[in-house]
Length: 408
Image (tube, rainbow, N blue to C red; front, side):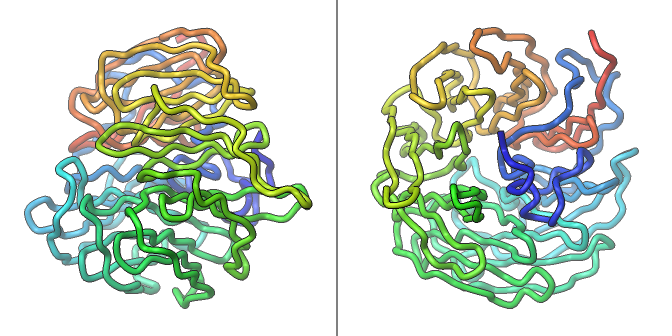
């Protein structure tokens, strides 16, 4: 289980069920406390469906009754930041920022990074070849601060997302140019600390937080240049590193599972390695507990539940492992392709395919496909859940699907 202290790292309080404040929700785990989300539905079950002002793969983030989302204009690269009401999907505000076009993977977008939000502000991140931008707006849409962290170089564009840790905005700036990890003051945008990193393949992983055996919190980062790195969130000091963990590009994010850190890397659109790493404790350094070199994801992040890790592959191969040992429990091949990462609610996994079909699987040691429901258009974004409501972003719409009575 994820401790309340770890989940509270962003706001000083355990996350409410009405909040989904970063990529994949509480600590990036992909977990929602909702237990009655629907498994079958049609368009008439939507609370609302609204057309978006641009494209993008960023997930929505939710705080109380507001949804925050980044969009991009494919023709001009303009960044369009919006806030919607959760009740009816109507716009609360919209902000536009001129930006420069740049070379990127054909499946990437100008709005692939998910925002992070706390009780006071929402933090957006995007890049061009000349500028890494981190922008803070208050909940009314007024700009609080904006930072230019320098140029960005990557053949595929960018896609990592910021997180909030207490009074800091944490940015993973591992790229093919000058690389760094940064902590910015959430109120002012001032740099609180910066750690220079080796230049290597750009990393798209979003950091998470771990509680050590000593009860301290540390940030976890993943990249091909440094493997897995544990960092003191207050000072930026590197606590430990397993540099050989990821010899290929890291796209998916790390998850915590049975005292281990699980993550993957790959290249050429194919997952090449999954590792389960035991972090250091006392005089013992980090330990590679297990690895897999086939049947693994490249873009989708792993997810953990009740002693099991689920690997949802880009090619539709879903593998269930014993989290502590890496033992394979079951696998299923879905005839579809995926960029979205799975989320978990109750005993169910939800993942959206690139063709826009939501697949619902049992999050147990039994292989069971519960349902598959089409959204009607392609979708690359990871779903969000808040206040018992599912949010799906497709190529041109945001969909709000409320919970149904038990048994639906």
